[in-house]
Image (cartoon, rainbow over the protein chains, first blue to last red):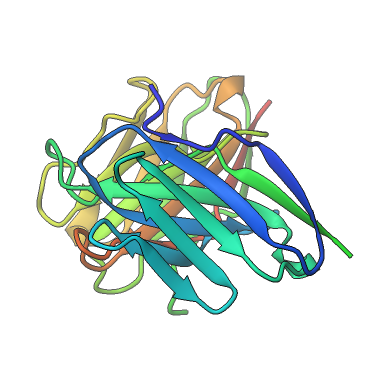
Length: 115
Length: 115
């Protein structure tokens, strides 16, 4: 049973426009959410995170929004650039069971930004 | 280097052989994670070590998989009697203080091919 879901396997956006990547989760015990970016043949790299006590976190062109009641978060990239083309993974963690701090990832969304 | 180091970067093995994959986390990081990414799939959680706590092994796909972390630092993931479906990129990550901030840093991965 997937606890973190990214329902769109791919997304294509024109350069300069906004990219919106979505993520849903099922476990209400998650209290920290992260986005990672992965290029081919490289390990994922951390992009931005948000604590459950906030509903928005912004870092340059990247903003993450959290809707706890809907168990939904999204990553906005504006303006999108061709170099943003990568696979984006949503991840969640929390204190539950005996696995405090464990990171659970979604399946990823492949973003293509076209010039 | 200061990052997470994994070795080997590539491993080709014959079906039925045992393999060992190594991860050197960032010095001082108490948490260490193993994930794998099969072709076209997301990041599948395998095992999580946090300090001196018992590891979370809930992601290991079968009893052919095991991992240990010696002295709270280097970790080895062992796959016994490898099968073709074990072919994947195995990723290791480490983080400093899970809980409030669980940004994990990933290595480049080990690409395992079972022939």
